[in-house]
Length: 465
Ligand code: UDX
Ligand code: UDX
Ligand code: ADP
Image 1 (cartoon, rainbow, N blue to C red):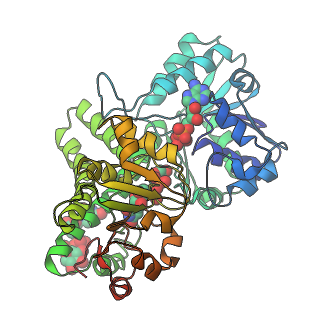
Image 2: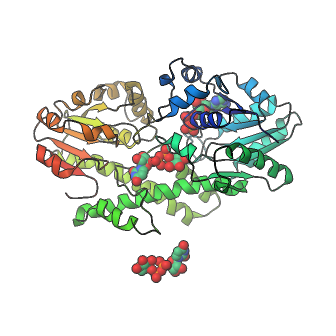
Image 3: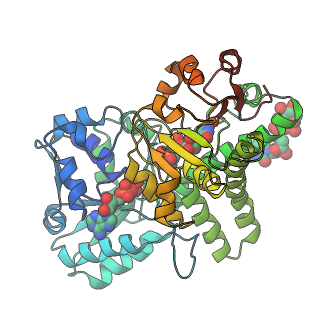
């Protein structure tokens, strides 16, 4: 079957960039991205492509090229489903905040809603593709809903997890290490898999397109994120030991990374990992393991999260102890709020938890992030429900100029590794701060010797300098 009409439900960090690249690389396929959120769709359609709601280097050029040609953004979910041969589900699957599995299991209500909507609208056979990260065996639930509430048409379910990382979405999509497609072991399943392979084959070499059964594909996504997060927690665990022993975690990471069995990536010690995937997916894995009675498996992976929580808390508490055991009414400048550089996404960012800790200690926080606006910072804090939104607003200010954020501060904390932070006039920043002036580099991006040369008392992660 040749695909010429695709619909994607969910115009977020995954659906938006992925569909933009498919549209760019497959001019013969009409791609419609739909979302219930009218404001989000309006921004995707904004005449000025720089206003698209997701910041990713290179993305606006691709949207400019394909939008209106074969790439469309719309709130008309029904029409797009009706017309499409292949429907990607790319809606959010947050950790449940209520009921059974609260704080661990993935909340699948948005997925179920999509399945029900597809079932009620579809008047011809459809291929439904899971793009969102889902617990293993979700396809079974989707299939049940489709088959039991549909209009008698045939559905094939595929799992095609997204491995792009935010901040590098465009290059990751253009040159993926691999594309993974899982489907049913039946002739109809094979046909559906082939239809999707042909879409990717427009720009991905076929030997990099892996096909598996549905459950392997679903579980591989959770496994990949668990392994990546585990590397960060492992190196962060070593960072604390380095600080005590005079070893330097960057040197240790370099030394072990040159072992080809270990490899050099994902060994940067930091204030802790964030993002919408790692924590959520590991919690989900832990929950699944528990639900099968596999308590040792669950405990093994849960330790990755425990280590990450510890790293965030450790960073925050070290600020307090270093500032003579009190930050009450002291101004602390935060450089960075996003969970990593080159994205405006702040979900699960370490900055939120460090801020929460320091607000409990009555610090006054002043935030600068090149891509994050005030309302997002406040929403992130309010979401924790640690104190009233009034108190959050009193404790934290968000400014548009890094020098203003640092002016008069007792300490600066670097929470995100934005490149521009390295280029600042650090002497000028030092001159305008309270003395002694402290810098806590949670991303190890600044040079310890240079910073000491300007006069700072400087601390990074994983070395005693
Ligand atoms: C190890 C280190 O690899 C080596 O660098 C160090 O100098 C000494 O310790 P060794 O113990 O000889 O070497 O073997 P290694 O190949 O690391 O395997 C260790 C164990 O892990 C073996 O029992 C091996 O069967 C097992 N293993 C290894 C697996 O079960 N799966 C794997 O993927 C790799
Ligand atoms: C991740 C996976 O990489 C991606 O394949 C999956 O599809 C979605 O989840 P993402 O969350 O966008 O992508 O970012 P990633 O680059 O993986 O970083 C996650 C977090 O780990 C960030 O907070 C980052 O700063 C942190 N990190 C990463 C480190 O602290 N040290 C490292 O060495 C690498
Ligand atoms: P991700 O990082 O997984 O892309 P986002 O939250 O950025 O997550 O994007 C998911 C999008 O899916 C949101 O914009 C949300 O409005 C949209 N969405 C959720 N449920 C539905 C639905 N039933 N129909 C259409 N859009 C939906």
